[in-house]
Image (cartoon, rainbow, N blue to C red; front, side, top):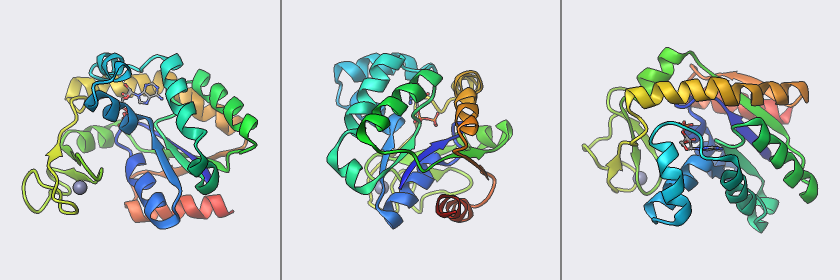
Length: 215
Ligand code: ADP
Ligand code: ZN
């Protein structure tokens, strides 16, 4: 299965990518997760990316494309398929991805657009807490962990993303509308787009995605 998940921040792309991995074994490739790992490891790329991410801006296309291309070209991705989350986020990235996939003879199955209103995004992101180790996502109000600051699943410490501040969230929404909404239209024109309602429960969204890919 070769999928792209597209949608505003906080719509549940990461949650769906994790479900697709655990149930179907497809490899999640999340540009945000990869950037955060680079920042954590204090690499040159991490230092560069951090300056943009903290302000809710996009990391420049060149380095982003290079970073993702490297991962898409791995053997395990060829073997098990992938679910891209957070990439492509600009038309330039979408065109670069197309070249990589053409070259590898791996066409996309579907591009899933998960859609919700801005108010939903704001309420979900303000309060979002993530696990530093397994990536499980909690919410201070909607889905608190059993013990404060500790992951239910793997007992690792939880953290709040530095870009989940109200002003930064608004900026990320603006950046999404300006740069990423056109990517959705790009795939609609290619007949690859499937729209799902992100207000539904994660399980329901998951079933809709799988049904759409099998259709
Ligand atoms: P969300 O989807 O919740 O906004 P992500 O974890 O996907 O968050 O991304 C966090 C940040 O990482 C983005 O705001 C942006 O700064 C950077 N980023 C992630 N993916 C890309 C990309 N494809 N191109 C440019 N910047 C990116
Ligand atoms: Zn965990």
